[in-house]
Image (cartoon, rainbow, N blue to C red; front, side, top):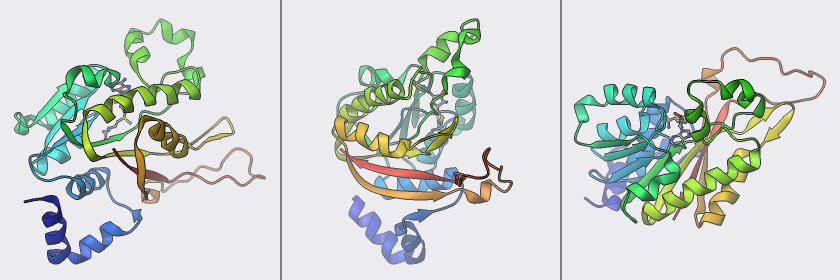
Length: 244
Ligand SMILES: C[S@@+](CC[C@H](N)C(=O)[O-])C[C@H]1O[C@@H](n2cnc3c(N)ncnc32)[C@H](O)[C@@H]1O
């Protein structure tokens, strides 16, 4: 069945759910949000890629929906957790234990139908100082895209990753990035905006932007340092939809 037919069926059979999907404000659990994205943008048997796989939520959602899935992850502990979650789908997923900067070394050009991922946070430098050099997992720390000395090099690393994603995505297909802005040491980092510029340089077009309301997960709100100056507490993420 082609995608227009799937959407058409969804529209006819399940119109309430479909109408909910078309609203720009989303809520719900992470796994449900990922499933919703995968069912909107792919058909069964198509290939879904998560370059920052973590413990495998994207791969699980894809497999449950009869899609094939590929994940990149540098942390072997997370890979073991993912393998455990995914054991009943053993022929439908593939995990590569390497940096996703190397995506194009592993995957053919134009072989992926959808990329969906949540970005690793940029770790502010004091968390990545000389004591970390003695850390057993120093190589792992170095490979983590979030561990850079500056926000600018974090964005440059992301640009390298998404250049690879661009190569392996089929023409016209989507790359969905779930991202939250951050406030650190009194400075605000509008990551979703900066990412949009990075993606544009790579060749992606920003096609849509939804807001994922996660306020229900933040029942206890912290008072922010200087109460005299208004600063919002970030309880949402952006679902950025880029098209190749
Ligand atoms: C925000 S988590 C991803 C969450 C995941 N998408 C999920 O839904 O469960 C970011 C992950 O990216 C991984 N990571 C960081 N740098 C990486 C790199 N260069 N290549 C592959 N994975 C990386 C981290 O180990 C971490 O597990």
